[in-house]
Image (cartoon, rainbow, N blue to C red; front, side):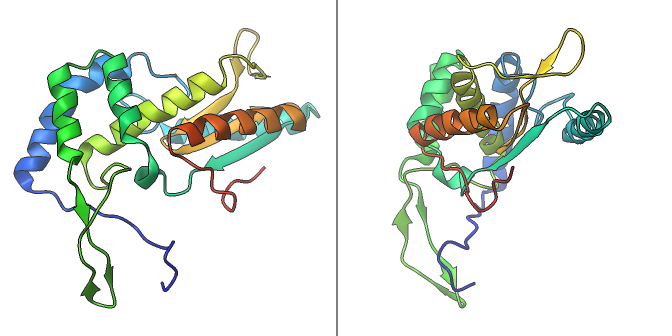
Length: 215
């Protein structure tokens, strides 16, 4: 508890604020959800992270049965919701044709955002927070999905190293909000995927958590 990095930012919002964010989310999500990658299952209608886990287990079992080499890399971001670049969020919202009025409302809700640290029953002075999204806000998970979609689409646009799932389909990764799972047949391919994603992630303020990322 005494380590500064062991913190969890929680935003306490008013009930009217939560209702307003729900209305705003309902107006945006259907139009923005459509172009998101099918590999992303976190916080999406008719998508299931449980199904992804079951699919991954089947892939592992079949790889053992067929004596096929399989590399899996589980990626976790370090303080993901607290680190994402807000300018990137606004740019992505405009890219997906979210009305400018809605983009401005979201941007203005973060302008001048201040937080305090509570430790040992005492509060620090308020300080301004210029990065990240609010944990506890209905919009935050939706906004973060856009960032992950951008990262994965950009980092995998050139290199294709999928595994063969069925006769017609290949799989490259599974995504559950900020938790990514890469699949590949060789160690070099998995290394290239991870390197590409790490570089693109850094450009939007996200860093891969080295301690929680496992092959």
